[in-house]
Length: 318
Image (cartoon, rainbow, N blue to C red; front, side, top):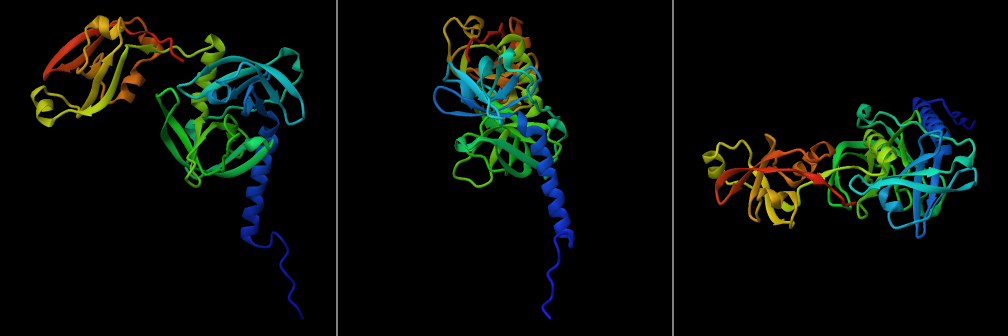
């Protein structure tokens, strides 16, 4: 007598597989209707509607070179959209579908601070124009840093092995509940299973600023710099608790740094009492709150420690 094969669900592995399938299916059913294809003058990408009144999150690099935008919904509707604002430094942008679009599906932005390595991560988007494709994996790392196209370092990046391809950019990374935990932004092309998403908490903060102001306000002082080590003997002689600073490579004419007296060859050690150990640390310091605020900047010049007073201006750069 030929043994009869076990029916599906007879083993614990089958039960786990069914539970995983149900989780992915539930997440896609909940968030999927809000995922749109972004059509622009050249190329396109993905996006997600995150409010009932038609605001869409996507990547800056998806929309940056276009003047016309449309959002194609899973139900087949193609709706015109307006650019609300974009920020190259976080690679995020917000579009809005017209008020005459009627009822719209929308997805909830989750709390990325609650993420744990190993939990399920599901990417929904339009890779290579194949609308509404789904891939799943796990959150493989948290707190990564990634360089944006503007040169600033993006912090709190989510790493996932959910497969992403061109066209997924701007689409959501969601958890098993269907909450958006990230906005997919990049892959490392030669690598396998190394994909990145901007954390949802970052996206929520940036989106609120873009909706309010159309841009993210930042301050700048007008120097080009590079991170350099500080010789140990020099650090000891000046009682410095840091081992690196920012070498001023050039100073922009008439910039806040130039007005303050900064010179090429200076090494920036700190601002307002906070250590500045890298270019990234200086970028993080130059926030909206620093605009027009006189700030004590500590430098080394020809081996001597000095203090300048710089008044950061509002950056007009994208």
